[in-house]
Image: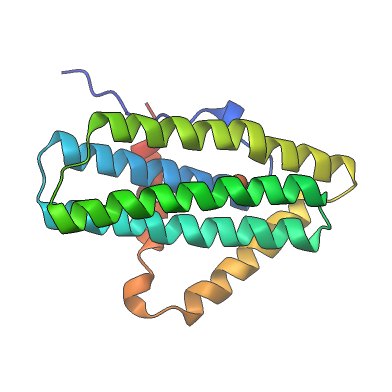
Length: 179
Ligand SMILES: [Fe+2]
């Protein structure tokens, strides 16, 4: 039987900042895990857990991107537009998660495709745009990646044990993102 990954990572999606790529791959992996849960009719409890992980990790990732952009003195108009996209996505997945929790509604393929399309477009357009304008402004992607990594490990140390699940997601992401 053909085992096709719902959302395959594609190198064209790389923004050239290692830690940000790792996080994007993790988000892609969570969406693939969600798709698997839907396709295999896994329990509602598991779906809620995955949706919570998606909301949680997206918040962490967006907060980091926003901090990086702010610290780098990124163009204000572009920053604001980027922020709006982040907020809209958080609101969207938050709604999906609470609808699922309240009504036990299953996540449709339509919703999955929408989330996939949104994330893909956001990375390919908005994220690549900030990455290249920061590169042009002379920011070192290596330093950025180091900075991002440090912020993440501080967060990880500060988080309660049950919130440290993203390590496991990251360890498994390759099997979830590669075709
Ligand atoms: Fe972004």
